[in-house]
Amino acid sequence: MKEIKLKGLNETIYYDECSSGLPVFMWVREKGKGYYATLSVKYGSIDTEFKIGNKNYEVPNGVAHFLEHLNFKDKDGEDVQNFYQQNGSDVNAFTTFNYTSYEVYGSDKLKENLEYLLDFVMTPKFNKRMVQDEKNIIVEENKMDLDNPSNLLYYGTFRNVFKNDKHRNYITGVKEDILATNLSDIMLVFESFYHPANMFLVITGNFNPYEVINIVKENQDEKEVLEWVNPKKKLVHEPSKVVQAYEEVKANVEVPKIRIALKIPRKSFKEKNDYKLRVMLNLLIHSNFGPTSDLYEDLISKDLVVRLGGEKSIIGDYVFLFLNVISKYPDEVVPILKEALATISMDEKVLSRKLHSAIANMVLSYDDITDVNMNIQEQIMNYGNVLDNTKEVLESITLEDIDHVIQSITTKEMAIVVLKNN
Image (tube, rainbow, N blue to C red; front, top):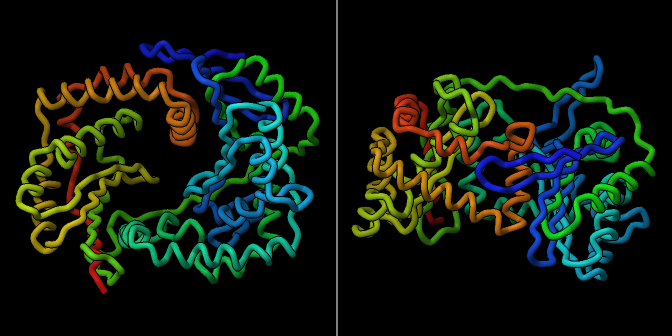
C-alpha cells in the first residue's frame, strides 16, 4: 500500500489497487466512529458518444442518470436502501456531467456495507421491465427539474454559452431522451464503463486502512472481471463565441434571478497548472464579488441586490466565470456587474488576507470526512490523481501571478440570462 503524504498538512492518503484494476483511496480520521465511502464511475451525462475499437456508439442523453436509478435495485429486485436502513446506515448516489458516484454513510458494519456497495454497483441485473418501470419515475423527476428556477437559470446559461458541448443538456435528459432509452443502451454503457479499471473507491473516516483494503481486495478477487474495452469518449469541438448574449426567461420567481457567464479560451492564460489557476480565479471572484467585497457591500447598502456570488469552471478548452445574482432591479444591476467584471482587481493586502483564509479553510476541511472525500473525488476527476502539494501551491501564489490571470480575463464573450416573474 502506498502512502501519499500531503505536504504541509500532516495528512496521509492511503492508496492501493485491486487485481481487478479498482483504485482505492483512504483517509483516516481517528476521532469519531463515522465513515463515508464513495464508489465512483468515470461516466457522466456528457458521455453519450464513444468509440470501442473501430465502432462508434451513441446513446440518448440522460443514460448515466438512468443507470444510476436502475442500479438501486439489487440482484433480487429489492431496493438497496432497505439493506442500509436495516444496518442503520444511509445510501445515496448522484450523477454529474463527468461521473457517477454511489455513496454510503455509516458508523458501524463497515465490512458489510462496503461489500454490499461493491456488489450492487458492479453487478448487472437489468431487464426490460425494470427499464420501462423506471421511465415514468425519471420523467416526473425531470418535470420537477424543468420547473425549478435554479435549473432554468443554470442550464439556460449553459445553452447560451455552449454551441456543441454537451454541458448544454440536462443531466437527466429530457422526456424524449428518457422515453427513448432502452435496455440495450443501459447494458452497453454498463458493460463499457462500469469496469473496475474505470472506477475508484474513496473511504474516509475512522477505520483501519489495512483491514479495509483486505476487505475490498477479497471482494474484487471473487468477481469475474472481463477485459476492459477502454472506450474512447468523443471529443467535441466548441467554438469560442457564445450562442446568445442575452436572454430573458419567464419563471415562477418572486425576485428576478440573474446569471452572467464569461467564456474565455484556456490558452489565453499563462498559468499552465489547472489547480493553481482554479485557486487564483476563486480568490479573484471572492475578493471582487464575495460577501466581504466593496461591490457587494455597496449593492446591498443601496438595496440593489438580495444576493451576489460567483464561481468558476474549466470545461474543455474554456475557462468560465459565473456571477449569480438575485435583484429586484436587473436592468440597473447588470451594467454595474459587467463593468465590475471588466475591471477585476486585487492588491497585495487583499491577496495576503485571502490566501491566509484559503489555507486555514484547507486545514479545517480535514475535520470533515465528507469534505475530504469529495475533495479526493474532484481531484481524481480533474487531475487524474490526488494532489500532494495543494498547500504549497497556495503558498506560492504571488501578486504577479494574480496580475497575469487578470490580464487574461476578457468580457468579449459574455452570456446573460435573467429570470423574471411570469
